[in-house]
Every structure is written in C-alpha cells, then in structure tokens.
Amino acid sequence: MTPIMIAALGLLMVATAFLSGLFGMAGGLILIGVLLALMPLPTAMVLHAITQMASNGWRALLWRAHIRWRPVFVYLIGCAVALAVWSLTRYVPDKPVALLLLGVTPFMARMMPSGIKPNPDSVWQGTVYGSICMGLMLMTGVSGPLLDTFFLGGEFGRREKVATKAVCQVVSHFTKLIYFGGVIDQAASLDHVLAGVAIAASMLGTTLARRILEAMSDQQFIAWSMRLITTIACYYIAYGSWLLVRTPVMAAFDNGGVQ
Image (cartoon, rainbow, N blue to C red; front, top):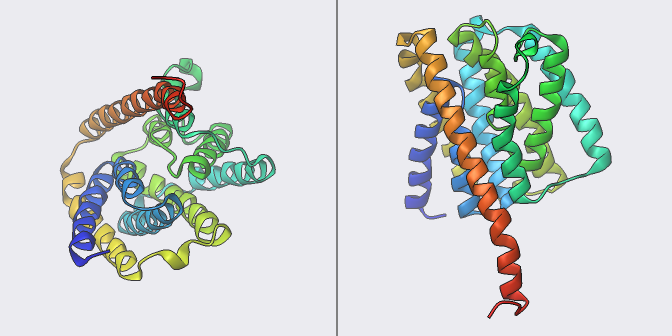
C-alpha cells in the first residue's frame, strides 16, 4: 500500500476505535467492511483481528477495574464449545446468509420472554451466547451486534459493559487471528507497517473516547447503544437480502439466461 493509503486507513482506524471506545461496539463492524473492499478476505481478517485485539485489549486495560470476570469465563466456555463443533462441521454460509444472520440475531434476543432476557450474569446464557457469537466470528469475521445486545441486558454500568465485553472480544479476535493467520497462513502477506499503524491508531482512538464515556450517563449509553445496534442490524438485513436477490440474477446473466 502507498503511504497515503496507509495514512487514510490509520485515520479510519482512529475513528472506528473511538466509536468502539465510546460504546464498546460498532467501530469494528464499520472497519471490516472497508478492509474487505480493499484487500483479499483472509488478509482483511488478519488485519481486522490485529486492530480489534489492540483496540479491545487497550480498552480492557484502561477500564480493568470495572471488568466482571465471571461473565468472561462463562463466555469462554461457550467459545470453546463453538470451536469444537465448528471444527467438526466446517460449515461456512454464503455471504448473504451470514449478513442476514448478523442482522436478525439482535432482534431475536429482544423478542425473548422477559424471564429469559439477556443476562450476562447467567451461566447458561453466557455459554449459549458465547457459542453463537464465536460461531459468527469464525464464519463472518465479526460477532455482530448480538454480543452488544447480550451485555446491554445486564445490570452493569456503562464502564462494566465496555470493559467486560472488551475482554471477551480480545479472545474472539485472537481465535480469528489464529485461524486466518495460522491455519490459512495469510499473516506473511500483511504489510507490517500497516499492522503497526493499526495497533497505534486503535490505542489512540480508544484513549480519546475515555473522557466522553466518563461524561455520559448510563441511560444515555444504553439509548445510543441500542440505536446503533438497530441501525447496524437493519443494514445487515437489507444488504444480505439484496445480495440474496441479486445472486440468482447475476448467475442468470453469466449463464446467458437473461438477455
């Protein structure tokens, strides 16, 4: 990549890390879309994993006093279950299906009966959500707004939500890095300068968001977070549906079936 392109991506990474540092989400979802448009999928996944590990890891360090470790350990159990099952099935959905899954899951979580609303302190819920989120991470590169919905459902303050989710995301993205950087062996094709810029930019954006998060109330945090989740989920549903309809039409053109 040219120096100008690296600088532009660095600025984008600062902005997306700032967004994630503020709400604990959304930045990575925006970044992966841009990276996939600029580079091959495995390379994009490796760079995205490095960026998100730096962003979430630094965020977890900044808010380490607010981490709730029990939900983290339960989430890790779910991740291990997903890895075991996914390694046996090797199922990878088409892109439209993956996008629809990412878009629908947060709405499914909201439609659950009040007795089983998302609760990060629940052992069985943490295991189930951890399994599903890790499966989505391995199939699509991101765990989507589902994990955000899960943590917003608990009796956590905004700092606890951001800090605890950050630790869970570090583990998820590290697993993704192992898969795409080790199993598929794409790490060597990644620009090391760009990787260094990604780490520095992620830490900077996360640090800049800290004061604003401190100034927000828990009510403002939840309200804006839910709006972001809904917006992103609707985008995934719309984009996935468009790809689902577009694919057969394009196939017909390629086969000469449509004049």
